[in-house]
Amino acid sequence: MRRRSNLLLVLCLLLFIPSWTHAQISTLANRNLEGLTIAAGALAVDVTRWGGAVVTGGAGVVAAGTPRVTLASNDPAVTALEIMDDWDEVDRAKVNTIAGQVGVQGGSGIATALTQRMVLATDVALPTGANIIGRVGIDQTTPGTTNAVAVITGQNGIAGGTGVDGATVPRVSLATNVALPAGTNVLGALSANQSVNVSQINGVTPLMGNGNTGTGSHRVTNADNDPCQTSGRSKSAVSVALAATGAAEIVALSAGQVIYVCGFTLTISGTTTPGFRFEYGTGTNCATGNTPATGVFGGGTQAAAGLLVSSGGSMMQTSTAGSNALCINPSGTAPSIQGNVTYVRQ
Image (cartoon, rainbow, N blue to C red; front, side, top):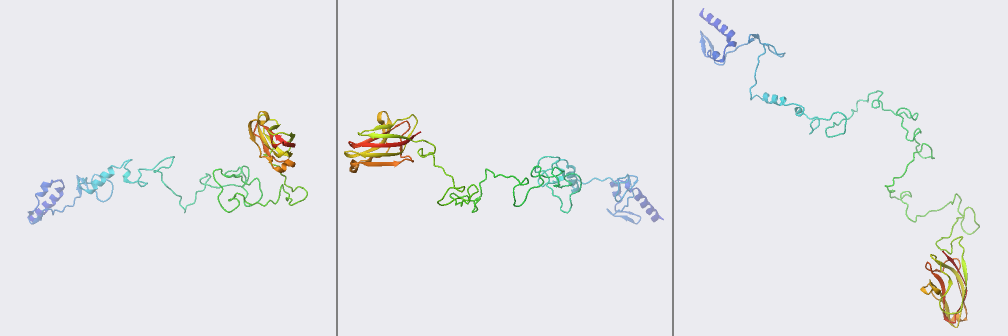
């Protein structure tokens, strides 16, 4: 009977233990209640109520019977929760969408290190729609229609391949800052003195060799850097009759002009080695600034018997300096210089 009473006591204790303190429960340790022994730390209790409410178990929402617990300060979970508590706009859970960067750009603007790189998936087609991004198409049927591209204004397309010029042939020009490429082709290597075979002049085959003139005759003109050969320019002539040594003016000076001797025909005679030369200068008989314009013609023993000297007529033989007169200076003993001189003054 007593054993049964002790069992009832234990059962009562189990019902009220949840409200006991730790010290009260500890007094039961190693107690022998009429043959029932409770070893230290070995009291197994199935707690079905907590604070007067039925204890909730398993997953679910918090209720009155859910026990409140506190994590120990050295529990690793405390450190993890502290890290999560620091997450904000700057920390961003220590997760960076772009490696090494904090955050990404938003809205429109220029590309920077925070701009995300993206590519279109190759297995997904562009969506259909009316917008340009959704319907990329070029209508070349009629210039001016929606999405039409006219390379040449008002023209439908451009000409391709070889052929004649036309409205659809694009106009191009060579850049002035880029030289033609070097090479062996004619376009790329226009070398100096490159040989050219002229097969036509003004659309007509050139005439070659002796013969009459014709449409294939190449028209040429004399160079005008020789005043004596300039076409349309009149020449003047002056008679010469000198019978004494010393310079004698035959063409007077003209301010700012040069006298060009185009030709002369003169006879030389005298007693001993007669001759002459052209000279120029200013003052009476070229006395001031007297300068020889040629060497001496004649001057030998054969000239004493008479010598004819003739030169040119169409090309310049000699000339004076600007604003100078032209003179002839006979030499030898009893010289006689007779004839004429043709010249141009300009």
